[in-house]
Length: 420
Image (cartoon, rainbow, N blue to C red):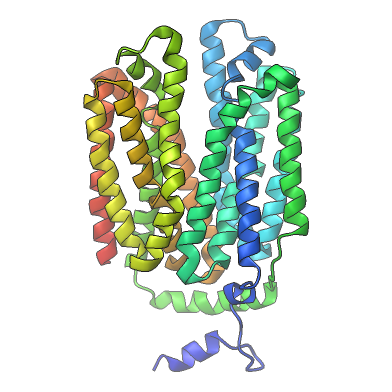
């Protein structure tokens, strides 16, 4: 009895089969994937490279008090993530309406301009404002997730999203290393100009190399048909989507929860003050190193055995690996456990994005993946805040217990959603 409806949804008024967006772009998705990986890498390098010298730049802009320097540095750094969390669903919706490539170009060009403008900021208010604008108009990695998630074939989506995640992780890891070197060679303001120039290269590659076959009329027709069919969709789909969004937020929250106190915690393990900053940086980077090695592999595993299986397994493993971090006696033990945690965390985001893509109709995948990105950045903002509060009121060791427990609970929630 459902056969006539299926036939209508796949044909237009002239009884010509309607080819889906993924099928129309099957010849372009691999090339587009590699451009998106490069663009995500370069944009995140440019956004994260200011970490080592951000307090110095805040001082250059007229802030003298040490407490004010710390406060403004935190506000300036977090402003970008806040802006991206707010606008990611909007850009995803516009990607569904006007195509994915225009959103990539918008993000790359916008970030190239804003990054260069940060280099000519006159005061700390302009710095914070421009960092916020970078998040509002940027989000190349988010736009890349939408393009790759909608163009990659279903059977390769996990691997493709895992590879994209690897590029983003590498950018976040290498950015601070570059930021520790460039200011000594070309100055702090020159470093921002260099970052803008690199993003401009990504913008040019996006304009001239990325290909997309987007047909607004056809996709609008499919959207109208799918909207009518959505009335018969089970309401439990909303619970499944809610589970995916909550899990995405927990991934970043768990990874970032210890960041406010990691240096203090490493210092309590007997590290000499002269080496504290360097060792703390190594410990922080270990989770990203671990994720880089396993993101694409676990994404491919999700293609083979199913996304829910990978999500539940990775949540349980990550939660269990969090607990021993509270009992380490040497810094290298903490670093090793953080690396293992990063290896298990890496399987979550590609598997979640893969399931989110197929949780809604094709015409709404951009919006859905936009909400997913918003949830991730919300976790990145909330993680340090929650972790800091737990450390202040319950002690540093409690951060690991609380975060590990939350991840295991989230695994139970995912198992319930899987049954739905």
